[in-house]
Picture 1 (cartoon, helix red, strand yellow):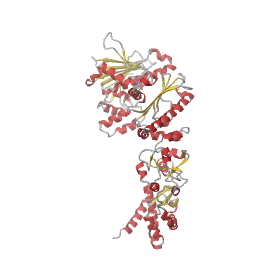
Picture 2 (cartoon, helix red, strand yellow; picture 1 turned 180 degrees about the vertical axis):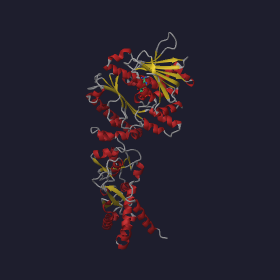
Picture 3 (cartoon, helix red, strand yellow; picture 1 turned 45 degrees about the vertical axis):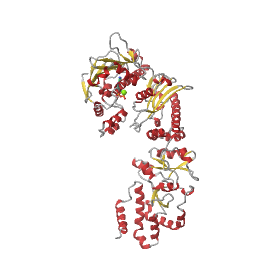
Picture 4 (cartoon, protein in one colour; picture 1 turned 135 degrees about the vertical axis):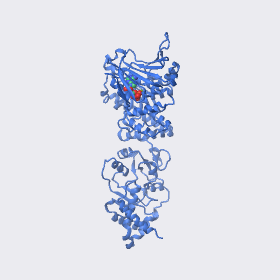
Length: 627
Ligand code: ADP
Ligand code: MG
């Protein structure tokens, strides 16, 4: 095949543009990225040789070499890993296959501020392309393990690249960077040595600096043993962090690092991390886990579904075990009993560690919760075995506390006679705290939890209880407020005598509205607002219904109950005209519909009929404006 020229995928072009304008304050990270890729390539080949020993023919020992040529102004990074075929080169070095790239690019759109761009892209990681920060030209020569052809890839990072046949002895990959004049510092062996030590010490293969002069020897720059096999006390926080960057393809600080050796029925080592920032693609359904499975230090897969449940998909790191057969195929891993046991053990370990953090440093825990709470809560719904433990470490905003509260703490604040955990669900705390449904609860000082994540709608109905207490939506059914003693003066007391006429009003409004509402009731929960809508006792929570309707999961909504506030002045005025036949005929129906429509507006729903709404509103306003 002859030489061919390709243009980069649009997203790559954009990234290269940002890279060219040097977004990283530390350009030196290019070396970390290239060494990281070489290390991955060695891991991949080592796994492939288990099933196909012929592939190992050129590979006595895996290694990564760095060769500096001051005269030619080049840095060459080579490895004897798996290599790339021609098509793989075009694919891997010309496009970005990562899930969520599209979404990520959209988030960059319109952000011209270089600092913002660079912090965003730092989160995404530009991998191979970061080499264009220091190189005017890059040539990659690669020979795939088991193949006899070598191919070259060349680009100046300005829109296109060339692929051509090439020559190469050993299998593996060579990346040759033509260093630009302003970045000559990287041709200095001491500079390279310090960069490798800083970022790549944990790499399991030796990173070797080739001699600069005849007679000198190869110099191994890193520790060259897998980090998780080392003793905890010999590993610095910095080294953990760099390892996390490598293994997790993440560039933030780990929020939590969990390094343990488990010995017993099953032995394994885990080195797990929880990131401090939420990856932008955490809710992307195609997102893969970031947990790598090793068997006796041999990398097996980073896509083992059975190793960690989806609700812990933010956990990154490595599990290494001696108890799985090295020859196990990746497919067989799904149903492997050892994998299942490791999974249940690490779930417990992670959750118990979260609990410790939550107790020890609630403020720091709140940061974790902001980033990953919505993901973790999926487990309440999905993982029956660990449901209660997850509920224990779950945190909520509420009507009575500024910070997050646990359910345990909520229970200690429950009022006498209160036997339910009250909640209200909706889009955000701001809106919910203004909700008319809350009024009566606030007046009595009864705490209501705010449920603002879509996932809450799924676990709440399926869980039902915590610590023997039912969860109860305050926008549904009766509010039972009368039963709860709070010591505060009962504002409703004086209205009791009005009961009879209220009943009459309620019945008349129901007649006016007909089937538009399920029922009209005098409310226990309102203090300031005149009306509100609630769902019937056995019906779906209103917020859930709204979500399902938005996603076209249901096409009809259930009839609602209209509650009216007997102590509201407007309701009292309506009471007065009930006995005046003439006035009543004139506008009682309009007033009833306007009450219903205002309740709908407060729920964020459209009014029943916009034309009629406007007409009724005008009629009443005319009556009101008396000059
Ligand atoms: P990432 O490492 O996150 O996948 P990179 O931009 O660093 O992204 O690399 C893109 C892809 O190019 C890699 O996934 C790999 O398939 C391929 N690649 C890069 N360097 C090498 C190498 N030294 N050996 C084999 N494949 C490589
Ligand atoms: Mg990479």
